[in-house]
Length: 187
Length: 441
Image (cartoon, rainbow over all chains, first blue to last red; front, side, top):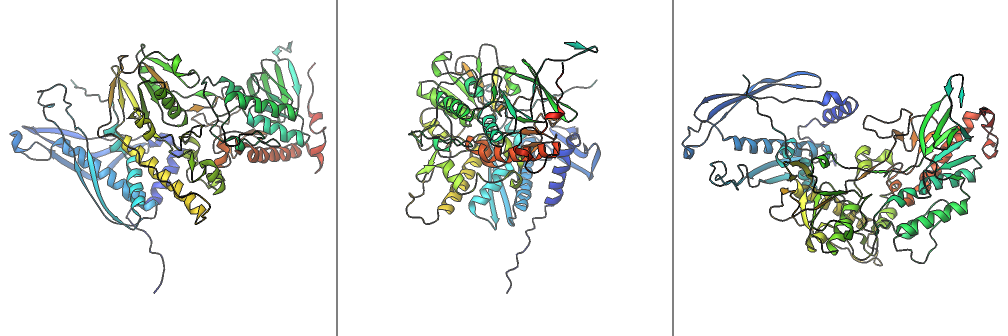
């Protein structure tokens, strides 16, 4: 029986991330990215959105293919329910961002992840969007992310992973901090 | 005077080394230069310990215990080793040090420019120009309070102060106070204002939580003993981050074991997230409060367990102490209308930065930070002292200056030797470098 250490592998290329960090520290202008999405109304409350192209590292970039997403509302809103609600898409983005961050931080800290699962609850009072009570905000009252993580690490190290992932998460920042939003109608 | 069509400033003098600033760093450098018989002068824009004199806060005390106020050749010898110096105490201490060291100091001499001229530095001041082979920047890390851009969106009827303006609770307009920043300065202001019966909110971003005392000793004492403060700048994983780390939540007092957000909550203080924006007169606080507190709690636990590991099973040391995780209310406030009712005053306890506006040598990076390798600046003969994590984690404290000043002065002396080509014992001769100077008529 050997005591050889098994290399931690969460499938995240940390060397590439750290290399990018170093390169972009030296050339911060290349760190300017522009993310894009396109959307088209399909009828009712159904919209089809797509992403493919984005800008980064000083030039136009592309995903390997176009990805499309349907958003709609459920039948109890008298809608056709052809996709998730837009607010659920926000939760999808948050879960995707935090979980990717956990994997990357774990890799960097030599922590093997065995399974990472999250469930998110986001209460909302729809009196806001329905215009019933102007004191009620349109958006979520709060968001609670519950993680179940099985990893070869102590409880505190796992807590630190999750905390560090939030600290470096774009979606967490987008949700927790204000952003100026410009919506323009082109003639 | 005008010669050959050029305006040349009055020459104040030539020497080997100019030390800029007569705080703990400049005085320490000067002491070591004198010990090595290196001709030099210390230029000070005001009086000894000027940056400390400019701090307005009546109750400001050092965050390090008196016994740690160790300078090269001069240690604290008073009768309260575990106390914390007030500003008058510290100023007197540094004045005594300068007097005992016969520091060649020129007070009320403000440096307006430092530039390279061939192999020498020209140091312009309000009292003429100095020339020297080498310059030690010891002008301090905290010249100017940092105020975030959001301050310009604060409505006019809100009183705004920085730590350079705040004197005491009694001087503020009546009403509630928002303290922005939860590092040593903000925490102590919030604590003092709550004691004075003010309604206080504190906006909390990333912070470093630690108890003042732990297991019978000052926490800095433990950090020194177990080697944390000896960690070198070139061993730190993320040096930029380490150098920007906010000051620990410490207080210059032994009254309580810990001054933390829980103790402010206990006194009725309201804890809110980092101030992110002001929109139509409404302040917006970040929803990340729970996470920044979780990060600080986790880091404090790691620090204390490092100390526990160092202590081991030493039965003579008091038992381990646990500190409750930071309590955050169910739904912390996210917005606050700045209508002058709930908040009348905002205090920006958002850090300080050094002022290098007079430095005309291209050694600042794009963010205005001085580029240096452990105090050796990227221009031969230029040095800096007294910056956070300059050579070790100890560099951020007064008691870290002795090691740093020794290292820098040794490097500087070698530099002067190589510059002047003097032999190995030339350091102790007064004449090196002198022929290189030509006094202008």
